Image (cartoon, rainbow, N blue to C red):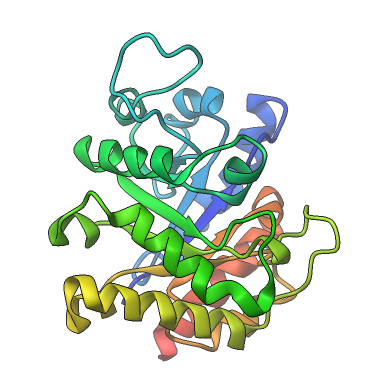
Length: 258
């Protein structure tokens, strides 16, 4: 199965020149890994249009989208507008939007429906909660999973990429704790089991489930050794072309030997 690595730049960098400086080193190396791996970067929305002319082998993604496709909703961007910038993936339900910006399960569910309607690919994050604890992740992930898919049919569910992203493992969170590869695998298998009940075991195994939570060049080997982990949602490390490439290449190396 093809692996997927997504770089979430969050509210970085400051200028389009810096944005191109992050993207171009990766873009120039993509011919080395394209066969078994897809790479996506999700810059701030203001950089999507200019980066559309820079990105050819690296796919563009968005960090957010409106649950409406138009109308009076100040500050929002629609899925149709994102498509004009050749966006493929949209991150939804990220812990920072859940915790700091007050996104509810209902809002996330509506956004998933809209993203699918505009034929973009939702990357739905599970595990983000202010009070999330390591030994209580399965009930939290289960609740968020069912809230995300409640308005979808089987075919729609199959078009989603899921990402397990425990809040307590994100480096920007106070007192964050490193998540082991074994823990990531356990929860990803749990998500796959939840999917099996909705789409069937065979189809669930063909769906992508990523891990996100401070993945970088120093710990990526912990996650690539488990074939059940289909890729990574990378935060801070995606802003360093060298660090991000190490993550990309490690997943590629493991994919061709699995």
